[in-house]
Amino acid sequence: MKLKKQLGMGIMSMALGLSLIGGGTYAYFSDSETTNNSFAAGTLDLTAEPTTVIDVDNLAPGDSMVRDFELQNSGTLDMEKVYLETNYNVIDAEGDNTDDFGEHIQVEFLYNADNLDEVIYETTLAELKEMTPEAVNEHIFYPDMGEKGLPAGEQHDLVVKFNFVDNGEDQNQFQGDSLELEWTFHAEQGTGEEK
Image (cartoon, rainbow, N blue to C red; front, side, top):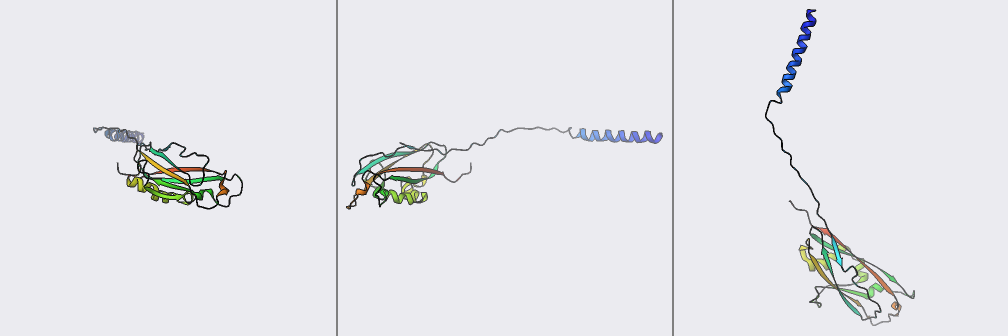
């Protein structure tokens, strides 16, 4: 019995020692502080005003039309590059077209409404449709906007002159035809920066 009593006392002593060691870890001073942090992503929001750049009827070879529109950066991040994708559909009234109507519509991108004689870039709708967005940026937007691109909250006026080219030949195949033009503008942010 004495052995059981000694064994029981030993276990109790060991338990008491462990509780003192465990309790001792809380004897030091301590403090804590919580910080509140957040991450919010910026936005790219490119809009074009008006949404219909051109809508004309009764064109004849030799006609030209000047239209201006505005690209707006309504987002919170600067746009380093703006790209233009061109697509169009020709509706052939007589079904006798042997040529693409888009090859006869010349497009001149001009600097601004006050200086209409300075052409940034000249091409046809057919050529513009085949250009990569990067090439369009290089030839059209970069010369006008430069390296600053389109900063957040700013707008940029663009002026375009469309010419139905009179090539001096028979263009009767285009009588009654129509061309539906779709321009899609894409924006790309610049390189991220340390904040």
